[in-house]
Length: 261
Image (cartoon, rainbow, N blue to C red):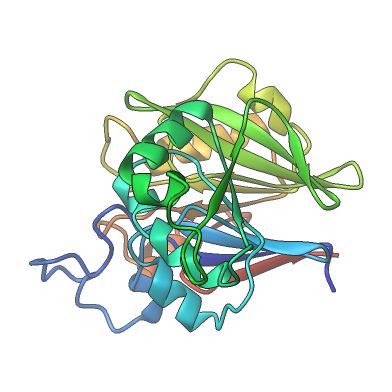
């Protein structure tokens, strides 16, 4: 198999698309690329499979992708659109002694423990229950043959990270779903990366997310071979907006798969 494959489980903003109560051209579009569930990716390697973020659509995303095995869950930050599918991880640790490794910054794990106290208190270690195993992210770590480097970014007032996936010394992909701007040193960590997946909410400015103009400038600073925009709002209609972008920049959509040999 490929050394790394990424599936976009979701590419939408916090409210998803179609958005409740909205009858705009994107929310009523028949183009499946305009139907965006909450942002998340699935990462497959020869050694295992793991998810980055489990939003409220996580269950239906797993059913769509016919996902039967999962070895770990990584978290970028504890906002609800990236976290509230957490309990659905229970389907991947059915045996009584099975655990689900979860990775996140210490601050992120603290929020998860508070929200899902029942899973962490040690009293529910039964078959079919979620049994999380915490792995605080304070620097680079490895899952199988993949080196994963946290990428600190500014996203409002919340401590947030993206992740850089490298194999065999090759920087294959950087994923930053929620950011307004990088913190010091983050761009340097990404230099030489093949593929950038980055937050590009809409055209109009936003206080905690990059818009298209900011995302294009960030891509220029990083210098990847290709860039994919994600975490998209309904201001953006896929077919109309993608054709306006540079050749090496595209808009991701739910179910899209990228791979590296």
